[in-house]
Image (tube, rainbow, N blue to C red):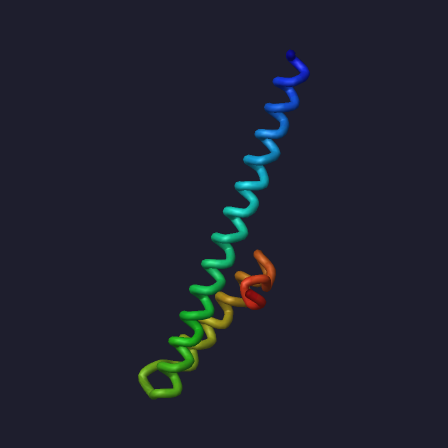
Amino acid sequence: MTGFLDRAKEQAQRGLAQGRQKFDEVQAQRAGNELLRKLGAAYYAERRGSGTPDATQRALQAIESHIATHGDGFLHS
């Protein structure tokens, strides 16, 4: 009986770890998508004359930082 409980506990822990990993991936993808939206808005504002190149550059740097930390998977979905 103890072996069964140990296996069940181990399987539950693996499931929790996989769930946490998937949750983190989804959160990183959402953050990346939001950064892309902000870059687009900054670029649009700059082109229309109400934004600045500096704001666009900051938005681009934020995306590059996100990619360095989490990868570029959000760009491919």
